[in-house]
Image (tube, rainbow, N blue to C red):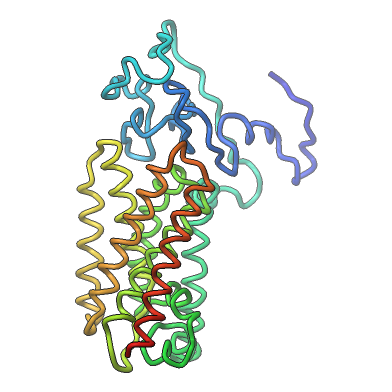
Length: 319
């Protein structure tokens, strides 16, 4: 079907209305095509219909719906819709093409930036901090990393800012790679702001546990803690949906080995344990919130933040 367009205008590439067809640039939560009472932010890679966690089937890239994968999800026979729409009879389904025309959009499309903007945003900030730290010879990390002495000096911002610091360029590269692998799958499920919230909450819980127990001048970086928290969140979401979590366990083992290689400082393991608790707990708050309402999710995360800050403050008073 021909559309009126302006091929001479590079700012309006041909077929641009198709960008907002089945998959909007900013993912929205829509009812699952099989279970209308369940909202989801992810779509089938082939037909682009919204699918909930129960209907997802893992593919080499992303997820497929039961129709496209040729399988029936467990327990979907009577759930949600119950209107006999499990399979469409007839010939092949037409799939709207995803346009990648437009100058400079090819790389962004291959990196899948549009479907995981928060993930790439976190990586970009951490890379910028890492490069600035390299140029300034660890000056930036010295002001952003977390240490008990810094908290005693009332530098509370370090409980959050240490999340974007990393242990050298090698650690930065590995953490960025793992973060992208997890985020490209997790963020479409939860949404951008939830992705950032889980990352920061995992860092806060890990930092609070480290600050309460550790003593002395030793400081820690936090990108590893936040990434481990996202792995725990991904595993929690997959367990809730009955999916395999071995890939997440492999990534978790990789980051633990990375910590040993780059210098496993005393008490740093506390931050990693806190990252697992914070990331997994945050994901459970997201998944089990009644109706998955944002207000309840925000209230749950706010409670975690208040408890962590109160624990750190009490620890400083009793120290």
